[in-house]
Length: 174
Image (cartoon, rainbow, N blue to C red):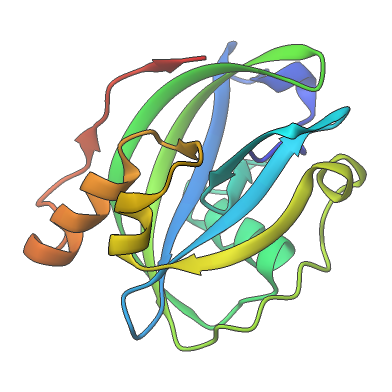
């Protein structure tokens, strides 16, 4: 879940939740790329999630989205689109609680080969791979996926296009 954070999971400039940029990356077939992660000491406690992670220094969220995408997937050739969704979440990971304010950017790419060469040490221990999912596969999935309503959100995005402005998702506390 973008576990490479520093600053104890919080943005010290604002004193609030960790600022996170995530990417809803779609290929030419409208498949979405998800990463497969797990707890460091328990590979059975696993989930799927969109690429992304914490904003570093003075970078914008869009800059963070692009940087994280390259680090986690090796994909740099993207058209970064609008912010689709915003979500607050809180979850336990690697022995502590993470409080995050996440923005989900739409991005398109023709590159589907994944090469995660920029992972942090913690990410190398907890990211087990990546997979392109069709909306139908995601709808039928029995695995844990974050955000939890991703299949329906993706279906709406594919049917209706991006929203006029970011949609605020329900807060998720795990």
